[in-house]
Amino acid sequence: MMRLIYLCLALTFSFAVQAEESSRFMAPGDLIEGTGEGIVSKAIFFPNMRFPVESGPAYAKSHAYAPGGFKGGGGSECDEANYSYPWRDNFCEFRRADLPVCASGGHQGQDIRPASCEASKHWAVAADNGIVAHVGRFAVTIQTASGTLYRYVHLDMDTLQVKPMDKIAKGSRIGKVSNNWLTKLPIHLHFDAKDTVLLDGQAKSVFLPPYSSLVASYQLIMD
Ligand SMILES: [Zn+2]
Image 1 (cartoon, helix red, strand yellow):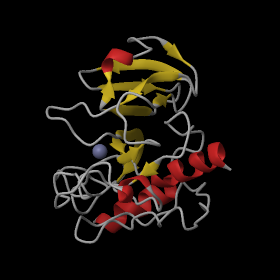
Image 2: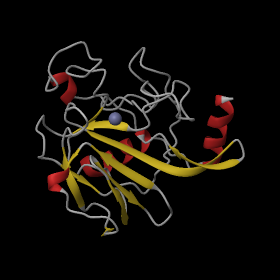
Image 3: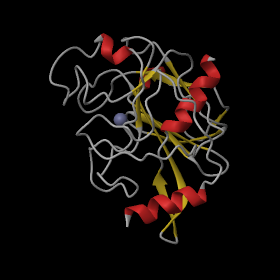
């Protein structure tokens, strides 16, 4: 069943591009041991994406299963381990049970720490041209002309540069990365991306793995 879904995804997005692998990036689908079953596909589902933090370095990795995280076994959220390479996919990290593309339930996005352990300093920026489709308590969603939804969670909402229905240009500032949630979390951007794909022959709007797209877009701003 799950393999069928993966196959459909792979066929739908046959423009997969090989992401460069280096010491900076662990492979897509390689989750922290015991935190879920990742998707190993290197498909770049969002080839037009701009990296969603204005400038690097940035560190894509779990905030939960890491020092200072709620399943991290103690320590400080500012631990050097959280602000160093390599990146590690956490799209399918176990959090919830209803994400169809993750065998293990899934977390549905990627957690990204900005350059330093400081709230409300680093800008989240638009991953593509679009409109501001939603502004929530902790999050902003932008929608592209083709219908892709990019969501930015845990922003400092006092720093927002946008309001609902604003047009927004790729790379323009949305708000500053922070730690806002029902309880304060480690400082990070939760970034996710949703698109309509064929799953078992039916068109469905689902969260898709952003990791390889993040690697590719990060290389464009860093190399
Ligand atoms: Zn997250």
